[in-house]
Image (cartoon, rainbow, N blue to C red; front, side, top):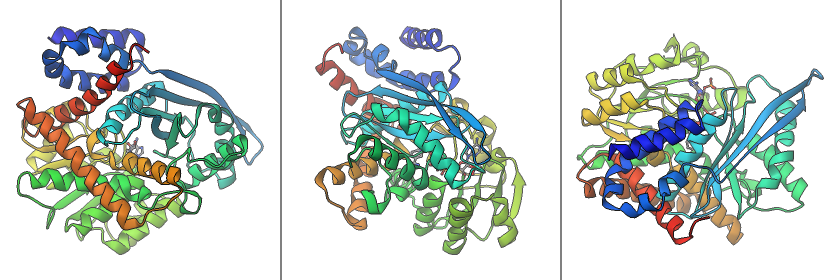
Length: 448
Ligand code: NDP
């Protein structure tokens, strides 16, 4: 059977030799699918895996814009429309200097199975640009977003492709992108999620990924009769996902003692309480400053280098919420030694394959990103529903839906893992449960 993994990986490597992140994402999935394919040879016969790893469409385009100083700058934009078997392409836009086709294909591929797990009708996609919003003025960010949308708009539509935010794309950027789309199309439609509340956004969307990853964590802990009360928690990053994970974990009685940005991390033994979290939100969302300033204000410890965060202290729970491959084998060993019982990923693919093996081999409750962080896209799906109904639900209604969906995602991953004799292997369970749904839809729709 491992022939199957070799065959698929050789296709991927031959076609995309310079795409290590994409190889990593595909490898994790095909490894999990082995027992499913063995039981259901029809997936093999109909070449479903070969079809699902090939995007339906990729667009790449020039994004020229003019800086405040009058310089002409050229960035590169992308949209990977990966799979529309169960709904319109759906997935975020990332603005970060590291963005390239490998990263967007890994993210788009993950998004197919993640969206299937949410139980909502959404296909998979991802997009972005190698543009860095850091140290840019609001006007520069606006001009960039307008230029980016001048090409992207022709590929979008409420029933075709509905993007959202991701790293470097928050409320400000979505507002500018949506404004330009509306102008070009002369129509007000729900073609972006994560919109401002005054123009069609959903309550709880900004909170959804961080809250959702915490709900997923609570569901995992409950399977062993545990909860968050009194637990020491490490949360990396200090952006959108981290901020709301800090809020929800604290609400459930956990003590978050660390967070980070791409320069370094802080340790605050007293815990990040509500007031300190408000400071982080102001620091990161308004001032757009560095996490080092937290340490200065609250007399906490600060360390250079983001990767040291997992080795700096003993934690009961870890929530990587910054970026891909931020938690390696050495960090995973340190977490295990320090008595960590659960890892819930707010970020996409933050743990390296070696780190994941260490978690699984040591019986750590490991919630992989495509299941644990699906709350964001789930509430995006709810935003699409509200837009289509021309309605706005209350905060409480949306939060209840989010909690229900996170439990359903947890249970379907848990049950699929059990079905294949690997209780608590959420990697296997989530990949199988997500894949089955998309694969069956693809079979029903013929060779297209
Ligand atoms: P933000 O841009 O709001 O925050 C990202 C955070 O991660 C910042 O603190 C940033 O630091 C840090 N970071 C970025 N790159 C690196 C790096 N190379 N090394 C260390 N730290 C880094 O993004 P989000 O919070 O929205 O996204 C975080 C993760 O969650 C991503 O993996 C994203 O794909 C995933 N995700 C997000 C969803 C959402 O709804 N937003 C949904 C599902 C997944 P700095 O301030 O220095 O840039």
